[in-house]
Image (tube, rainbow, N blue to C red; front, side):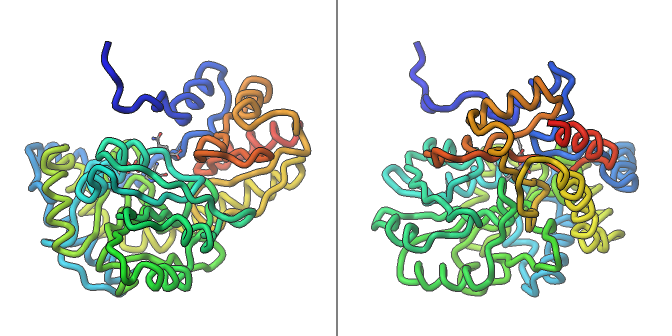
Length: 382
Ligand code: PMP
Ligand code: GLN
């Protein structure tokens, strides 16, 4: 019998809920992905590059043209000049980028601080590296960093803090002031950061994303991760990138080189073309997704769900205690899927220890207007 290195890992909630949605024919507002396609010009570019013979390995660090485009975007959005050669690495998805950063940093016995609710890929990566996650719950109801708890969680073994803003599942944003406070807290300690910013362009109501890339002090010890999947509506392309100072990038690349070596070549070509031709795409994203959030929330206003509009991401949390206070959220998500035809994600699965009275589910609003209207109609009828 094989002894599992990850005895606590099963099938993810995203796979389970998408599967249940498929089996029951429910509208799938669970796993986070759009039910519409990425831009036509972007999709056309892939075919063009495949036909043009761009089908062999790209450089290990990523296609130079794409790294240049990422550097240009970072300069434009965050005002930092980063080297496309030594500070940007293209990876097959943000998940792989995070995994490689963790393997590059964590040794047996190291502690990694994660904020609950937290994305599911962090902890297994830490455990495979021999480290241990220390879970620090975010404050309620705003999902902000609880500084006292963070302070209490720091130890001489703390080697890494994983940030995620805009935050999955809550949509909460970390502010520039909070980054400053974090910088002060870790200034004299040997602690690194992985900043998961895959929803960097999905921020609403005129807010600005406070990227760690734009923070002079924190950037020096950070791996900043993003995903083309979210920004260009192509989650299935599994293409992402890491920005980190040259010395950190060099260590990350040693791992990335042997996890996958490189990303998918024609996809990188297509993304490079599209970014060069359509720099406005990222500027238009906040309004694009805010309209979806507002449509969904306006329609849900007639339901018995309670919510505060998400500040970022393409997820909306909703409290269902006025509907079924007797059900815990996993059971609630199944009930909503089976009985009411809308699949959601329970929030407790993002916690090591969820608050007992948690009655929250997560809806993904990266959907066509028609899907959002149909879903809202079902949800309002409950
Ligand atoms: N981090 C967070 C917070 C996410 O929600 C997701 C994705 N879905 C990822 C990382 C992974 O992105 P990718 O699909 O590019 O691996
Ligand atoms: N990030 C996506 C979500 O939160 C899921 C990605 C996955 O299925 N691994 O829904």
